[in-house]
Amino acid sequence: MHLSDHLVLVRGGGEFGTGVAVRLHRAGFTVMVTELAQPRCLRRAAALAEAVYAGSATVEGVQARLADDPMTGMAFTVLNDIPLVIDTDNDLIARMQPRIVVDARRPLPPPTAYLPDNCLVIGLGAGHTAGVDCHAVVETARGPHLGRVYWEGGVEVETDAPEPGVTEIVAPVAGVFAARTEIGAVVLAGAALGVVVGELVLAPHARRVCGLLHDGLAVSAGEPVAELDADDAETVGFFISDQARAVGGGVLEAILTGLPQWQPPEDPDKGRP
Image (cartoon, one colour):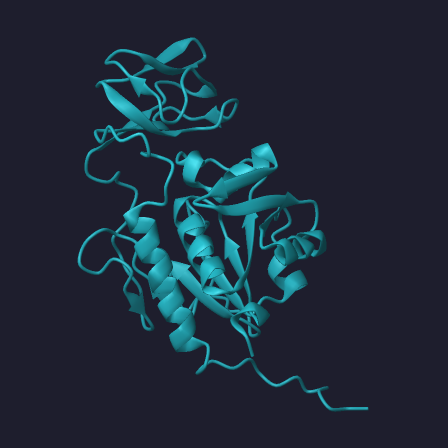
């Protein structure tokens, strides 16, 4: 059996989900990404979730295309594209019967003590527990254990803090966010990054914009809406981060290690006339 015979459903096309999807796609797996109707990731230039708004998104040469339904999406895989499907009803696992599910959603909805009996489930980061809501957990926090695979228990360190050198900017009030800049732009201290109900979102430093919430989304006061990077390289914000790439490697290890050992229960009707 070839790796392409295994359908991997990645739940969430943000920073980590993109790192996982691109790495598995390049390794030869058939990958499908699911998303919300309005993704809220900041690193949009390096996130396949941007296909929800633009119809398609290309990250490091790998293209995701928005599909109206999962079966149309599977046709995209023939063209070596990754289908992205909006899973409003949260039923694509049951409909598509993937062999592998990777839960890369952020923020993570309250997990339930439920494991589908027909697929290998891998959870990313804190909030998941191996043997309860997934079979394996991959560490997402920076440090010596980044990308490590746990087959028992889970991890407790949250990964919401920005990486070193990155400044997170939050909304001053609740309301609809309107962007006043773009990812990749170099802004001066005091420059307007956006506006929320007449309140400007200002840059505290002269930095390059590496993350920016999509224009027109409603935000709460204190919610992150932009990220600035001290690195002045023009590529900042447009490539998969080292953190997400390591997480993708951990998922690949979990699949190659766990899949040969894990087998779905036998179909009781298999072989019947």
